[in-house]
Length: 139
Figure: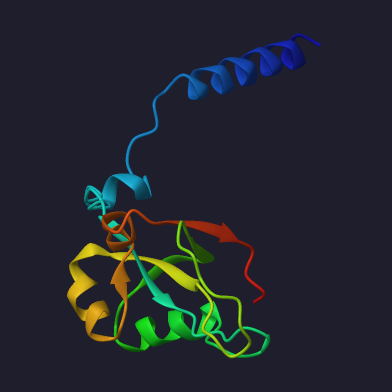
């Protein structure tokens, strides 16, 4: 009986002693180089007229198409939305172009490249005392 008690006590002491020894070596996180700080990308909004004609619902470029145009030119698109230019009178007549636009968030270093594709900075609307109202896209 004494042998069993001594064996249990020695085992318990060994287990508790091992749990208090700090682990040394082999930690994968220590072997990795320090993570570089991610550079924050400055983005800006650009837009392009959708080209949709009044009374013709399937006309114009969907937001996916204008986004694809940017991406095909090597410009990353971070977000996209559909909008309508606000603050401007526009004649209601079938066949006339609507004030619908596609708005995309891109890296500001690619603005000039986007402008060559026909996109404009959203700020140009503000320069004309105009605004835009976002609405859900029919993707």
